[in-house]
Length: 192
Image 1 (cartoon, rainbow, N blue to C red):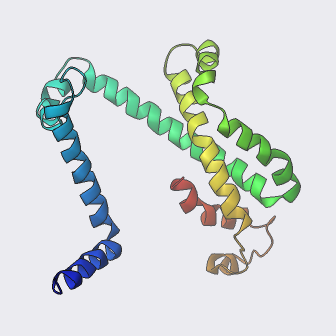
Image 2 (image 1 turned 135 degrees about the horizontal axis):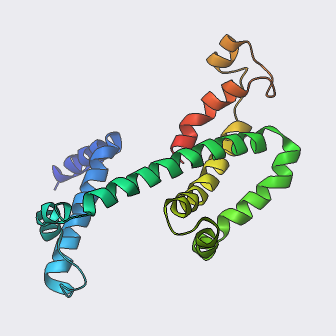
């Protein structure tokens, strides 16, 4: 009994020092739960075990049209992500830098962010038509609001006078150091 307590503490220490290891354990546990549920508890018409899904991936990718559809989807996703980050970075920094703009427009951004996006999907299809443009625009609306929020928050609490690159650029005011603000907010925006 006394030897189990130090082992338990060392396992907790390993998991707290290496969070990637804890994530791998959670993912492996979820896959095991999926396999068990699909094999013994759920109708196979509704849920396939991950072992069968992985075994049939080569057949799915060799199906005519699937690689082209995946390539188009990845292209649309990449364009939507790049546009969302670019638009969100500019709007988030503009909202975060000026108190009047922040008080005026950020509640509107939060209102739009809280609205279910699927309710406006028919409007995108009517405006852009069925195709890549409507999917990209729909993806941009999903990604731009979190980026605006993160950039707004990071720009509010960032002081270029305290940052090494702010001193190196010689830019100490918020209005004259837009590139410095962009460099400070970009890592947070990429994680949004």
